[in-house]
Image 1: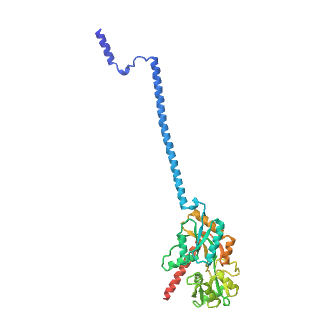
Image 2: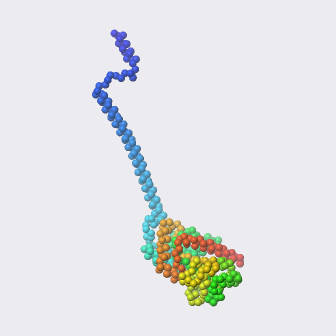
Image 3: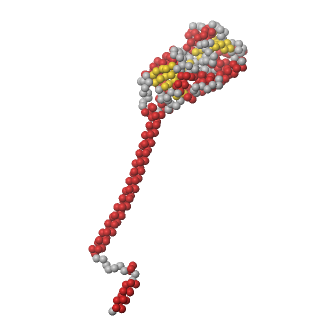
Length: 393
């Protein structure tokens, strides 16, 4: 009996555990096992969904952050633009506008500036005042314009005079207080064209007669101006260079004395402005041979241009408005539109023409072209005159 029990125990010990599954489980136990397995699967699925949900939530949080960041950048960009260009922050103009006239009160430029201010007030609905800052051939006033804030509230009455003054400083080896690059033209208002005038009883009847004699006898004939290297001296030098000859220059202190010299036959010719020359021609004190511009004048339509007289010696002095060069492009567009509207106003044009100027609106591009051309011509004339003066010493 004991031998049988030992043999049975030995068989059980030698049997592998993996081969023994035990007796069948009762039904209740099987149901409990299935329930446990089902709950385990549900729990696993829930954990998976929660993990996925955390990923989705994180993604949405990242997306919200990106949107907030983009919005913040946009707001900052708009704020910077508003600081650079006040017209984005407030409607332009929102306060008084100042026009700096770099010439003395009472002159033609001063009259034009105040006429502009009167019309501009109606166009803009804001006060426009004129401040005179004369001196240094307009350079003091135009320097003040160039250095003013580029916010559209300071404009300068710009002209050929400033170009000439800057060229003169450079020709003499001096550094001017500003350059043309410091100013942005926003439109021209008028052009002033010199007239070639002679004494009424002069034997010359046309430009052809005058050119023939000037070329035949260099330095024999004399002309006058309102001042050395001034606004009525340069047109005469342009004329002489185009002809290819020389004449004696007699400078005076102002246009009035020069006109008196022509009337009194003390000189043979001069280049003087229309506003003062036409009344003398109408009174048969002087004769006008040519308009030194690119087209005939409405007030004297029978007088030919200098080119029609056979000489390519045009000289046009422009008058317009400029602002600091750093003025933003959108704001400059608004200012240009305002200048154009004023320049085309009939009342404004009538005032300009009463001063002897020809009312003519010029775009900023046209003014830029004038400046470039006149700068080159004036620089050449000044170098030539200074070299000639130096050679005489």
